[in-house]
Image (cartoon, rainbow, N blue to C red):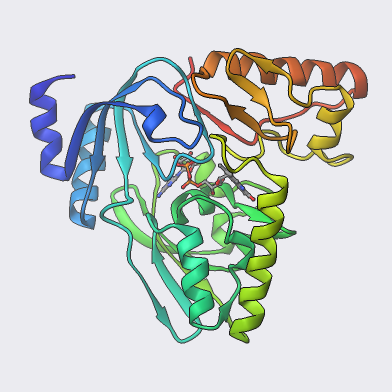
Length: 300
Ligand SMILES: Cc1cc2nc3c(=O)[nH]c(=O)nc-3n(C[C@H](O)[C@H](O)[C@H](O)COP(=O)(O)OP(=O)(O)OC[C@H]3O[C@@H](n4cnc5c(N)ncnc54)[C@H](O)[C@@H]3O)c2cc1C
């Protein structure tokens, strides 16, 4: 960490130094990040990204870190968090306009209170607008791509609204995964007027289902593997007898075998050792390649 760089970065927002990434992720795993910067306006974000690109300083935007496996090593770069400066939303008739740092769960509940349907599927996904667009997050056969009208993106030094079509959404992917320097700033979601009690009851129902089937009382990053075409990932993991299997403090959840949980002092290297074992056994038994849905960050 350099005091001089810290001073420069503080032009562009609030700065913290030597921040454990375990505090920035829902898995509670990861070494220190040299700097976390929270820009509070588009002007600050513009200045920050231009400076980092010009100086060749690596950076990464974090949402709630609910889909990230950070390595145990230090990240010698800048994590940009939009949760403080980009967290407002409003409704414009049937349209929801939300900044990238908004919690998608909070939006789903506010939409429900406004009798607007469309985000019920997201009411248990613990991410931000930015992270859920980047991942095309989804559940119950619905996904963010179905409700996105357009996305405000910062790219090549400009802020531009792009259409849902341009986002090139597919299963758990979007154009943003191919452009690591782009920053999602906000989105417009098209919603549908619906009976509020119906929306609430659907959300309650799904909440109940998640509570019964997912280990929500333990740190995790949600489903670890993508579902292959032929069989859901959980069936394959169950099939190799890995329910409850652990390495150190990292364990396959007893409650949901496609969740891997941190029992307290889990490390990223143990997490990867366990996922490697699972991939290898699944390949041997079923000749299927399991791919990670959780994104690895700061690995060589
Ligand atoms: C208990 C639990 C349940 C879950 N259930 C589901 C589920 O049902 N369905 C599902 O799809 N996922 C699920 N997830 C995974 C995760 O919540 C989603 O993928 C979520 O969309 C990630 O959002 P985030 O804000 O936490 O993103 P992060 O994990 O912080 O980041 C993910 C990626 O998005 C990028 N990113 C974030 N914000 C921006 C931005 N503004 N601009 C550019 N890039 C950005 C990051 O750089 C990173 O590459 C679950 C996770 C947990 C812990």
